[in-house]
Length: 291
Length: 297
Figure 1 (spheres, helix red, strand yellow):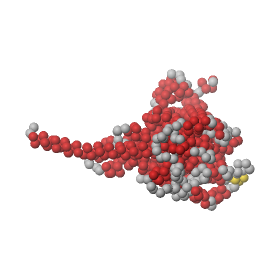
Figure 2 (cartoon, chains in turn blue, red; figure 1 turned 90 degrees about the vertical axis):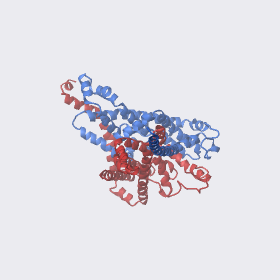
Figure 3 (spheres, each protein chain N blue to C red; figure 1 turned 30 degrees about the vertical axis):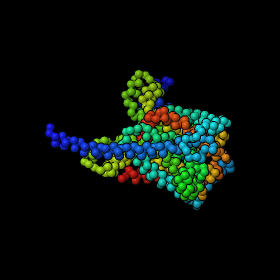
Figure 4 (spheres, rainbow over the protein chains, first blue to last red; figure 1 turned 120 degrees about the vertical axis):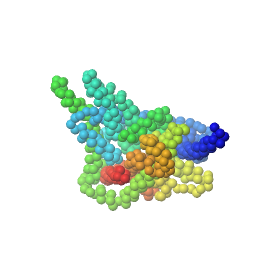
């Protein structure tokens, strides 16, 4: 190899590296801007948390970190026990509704997917068509029903509209399509009855879908507002969002206390998300795209 | 039991299927279909919840038609849709497009954008409401004051209040849309991009000729999904305007808030039911139009 050849090859190398450097710089700026944008995105949450840790005299100061952080606001807000009660209500309601929706949505989805029977198509279309009816159209009749049957201001009254969901049924039906019919046939030959086949053979195979649905239903019920607002009227029966709305609306409530209340109702889902992050995002994509 | 044993396998299946469906069918009939019909029925009646239900014919709809508040609300509802949907679509696409090209701390960045989706609308409405307060209370105006920019009236202005309420709604939904867009971007075969690179196609052509056309199903989903959300906006408006529901001169009032007030503040059930029927029709027509327009092209 002669000197000129070496120079030529190193020049081509440089020529290749120059755009790569430019590309790296572009990547760096892309990263930086997205990073700053991301920080901006979480700022409302950060300010909520930081304000909840501030003393009153510091609240209207725009600094991010309180000079003397205090948990006094939390002690004050939690003192009379209302927030505990609302949190317990919200937790119980969200858990029961999620369990019910998982059970029934998967049962109905499975039946519509794996059984051949007269009326199957009509049932499927009927359930699917309820997706088009907005909740707001149903709240007035639900309220009248609740009034007639004494469901106002009870857990049952808050929960009954969400015990089954058309969205979940559709989602589960989609996922049961991936369970091979042979598995079910084999279980049938082994002498399992249909209930056992659904529960022990099919259900374990759609676990990721169940998890995705659970996240959606739980989050939906945890943050649900309009129906709990309508159906509850005593302070003890409020859910967290309804309680927070009434707390914020009280006269002379200081902003740092409202921020503390908001933080109390947000922290559980944030912690849950930070722990199961990957899993939740995968679930959201799955439910979003298949549903 | 004897009868069951004598059935063929096919007949047994039918029995099982209906046994599984019995409770759900009752649920859907009683909790979904009956109330739907009932809402339509009430919309033709006059009823204040305590007195008698009397037949009113088209009265509620006529009253709605000639109610200036309704037309204001109608405009507001569509303003939420017409501003909210394109803005959130463009922002979330830009974020997803660039985030998709990054590997360094990808998961962390994605988390930052997704976090607001996990919050409750009520809690965040109160946080943003505080941000919007005038000096010396609100964060935004304190920032403006610190850099010497004149104050902005957010929630008390008839022009700024609606976008101010829309902002947290867009903000909270962005994370979801970014995640869905990224899943859509990842589904585009890499070979298209490689072919484009070998041919030396500039990035904007790649974007407009390959990426966006192939993302169409994702775009349709996000447009329809977010439009329904903006047309039904309630939690944010309710919580940011308690004390003056619907903002100054009803400038932020959406249809769902009007429904809530008619039904549970004025107890005019027939009138509220007529509004819910209108809401249903708006949702139906908008979704169908969007599907039609976006699918055809």
